[in-house]
Image (cartoon, rainbow over all chains, first blue to last red; front, side, top):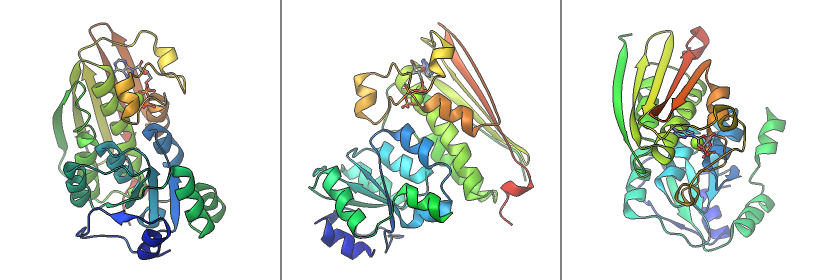
Length: 128
Length: 145
Ligand SMILES: Nc1ncnc2c1ncn2[C@@H]1O[C@H](COP(=O)(O)OP(=O)(O)OP(=O)(O)O)[C@@H](O)[C@H]1O
Ligand SMILES: [Mg+2]
């Protein structure tokens, strides 16, 4: 799904407009609020998935960015209207992660993405 | 390639900077032509250990050494130590503070995760400090073809 369409679908805004390596498409999404859980689950995922994968989280911290960085996920979707600080946005620019945010809840955000064929971790397993 | 060795200081509760060791090591490993999957494996181990020193200890340091055939990483902190190593290694066991949980930690998955990504892990602990030594073997498959 094109990034532009995702922004519309979940009524989201992009925080780092100038991100030099901004993604154009989001085809996979993974929800996490506990970083080690995400790292444990997603570590076996083929790295090429990440370029089109988003981490959906309520955690607007550097650590959400670090987790995405380690997993090669290039987009983070912040839910429940949380806004990252300037230093978080700067770190995102530095490591090349696109940050977007929506006021919707985690459940609704995920539901909308799922209904629009953004795939889950289970689909990654089935495909590979 | 030339051997790489770097030491990092890690401050107690400095959660904003946690992940720096993992991130800089990731860059170095990529520069050396290692595959994304291998790089991910190593950085997960380093990141989990780095976070543990930040959120559970009084601070410490880390030495990362990279050679053509091995990545060798040691984290050493200055206490208060792990009371029971067996419990600490059990998936889901955590004594994480409210502060750590608010920052996305405390699943009790860090040490099990380190065990599963590393080729060798040695964890020793006393009141004076905890030492975590992990090794990642590099073979031909770990380099980009
Ligand atoms: N360096 C350390 N110093 C003191 N205690 C530690 C240290 N590392 C780990 N522990 C203890 O071991 C427990 C388990 O660690 P582990 O990394 O598996 O989980 P966690 O850090 O609590 O949560 P998570 O890693 O999932 O965010 C911790 O809750 C803590 O009690
Ligand atoms: Mg931990």
